[in-house]
Length: 186
Image (cartoon, rainbow, N blue to C red):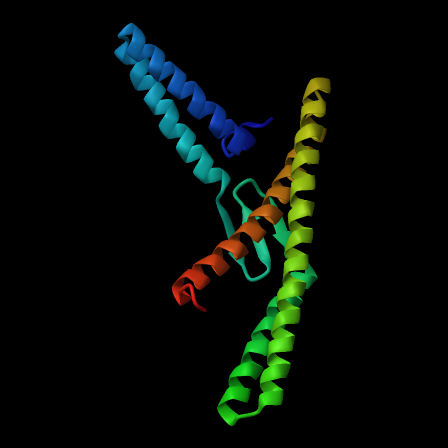
């Protein structure tokens, strides 16, 4: 794997954290202040590495990661979010003007939007995981054979899969935060 991939790998961060904890623990057992300090430094680096691994920027339906991965949300996610917005608007207007049929239309459109967006998220999540796994396995195979061009291709596939996965995670986190702000009864 390239140095760039290693610097932002969740698994690499976990391994680095374990190595730091072991080194620090052994340093404490043997009385080696140097090993304790180096172990603690590795643990801090692992935490930073893990945070980098989870960093992604999302603007509308487009997500990008620090590793160069990009993803455009599944069309069902986009249309589902749109339907939810329009459905909510219809419910609001129906409530303001006293139109039960408009409110019912809005609820129906909102519910269809939720279902469609959820299906799109599931699709993007499966695609992301599949690309990440395929990219990782392909990268290992390419590393064994020494094919650096194939390694770059598989690393890019992995980065694109990560972007798809982070896109879904971002949207789910945003919805959870909005629900938390509204309170448990809404």
